[in-house]
Amino acid sequence: MEQIFAFGIFAMSYDLLIGYTGIVSFGHAMFFGTGAYAVAIVLSKTGGSTTGLMLGFLVAIVLAAVLSFIVAFISLRVRHTYFAMITLAVGQVFFVLAGSQPLRPLTNSNDGLTVLTPQWLNSNLSVYYLIALSLLVITFLLHRFVHSPVGDILRGLRENEGRSKALGYPVFRYKAAAFFISGVIAALAGGLYVIVESFVSTSVYDVSSVSLQVLLMTIIGGVGTLYGGLLGAGIIILAQNELSNLAGSNPLFSHSEIVFGVLYIVVVRFLPKGILGSLMKWKGR
View (cartoon, rainbow, N blue to C red):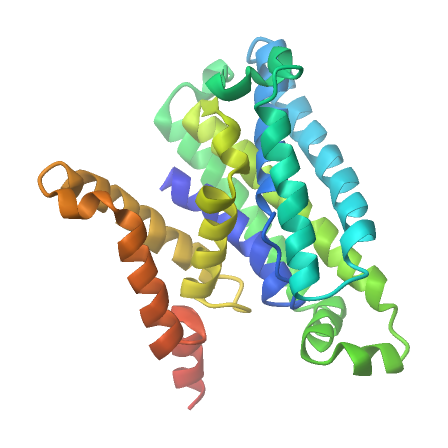
């Protein structure tokens, strides 16, 4: 459940981009990984203190904010496939940097970092309550945001960017704001994920295991529904755990990518709006 909550926050932040603004990013793991490493490094330098935990999340927010503005300035001038490829390239740069030898004193390269947490987070129950409370607060804030006038403008950009521009809306500013909020929340999700796992490695920057996985979670749950990302995270993570358990008895289940590939095809073919999106559509009928 802790993993589902952390990835659910990450998926909802991604849905703010793809579902409400119409921006497809293949490098969203750079925010998730930056938040994870920021919290892990600060906690390791401060001996796992509560102050270090708060400072780590503050550093994660600042780094994600700066990174989002830089990437937005570079890539939001282009559209669609070109934007996705730029974010993919920037995300791969962070993956290489995290595993590089010059940064080994900070990241411990490909060996990863064992994270020290405060004593009050030494029990599973306390970690669960922290992640669950974070999920509730972030979900409430995102719900308020997407149902605000700004959220309506973002949906207008998704549907017809040219018309929004003709109406006088500063399109780049609104897209940059959505990218900024999404990046900061993704960084917070990365920091929470580190607390759950008590370990971080370069895999948090990996495209296949993070960026594409969160894209799959969002599409399966329902793009543009906000809560669909949380539903998709639950389905994917529970399926991964069950398949890993079954892999010991049957080698067929050791290739989970095949199962998720089939699941993706089925959802796109028969539930193009995702599970939650399709349920909302049927309810409307």
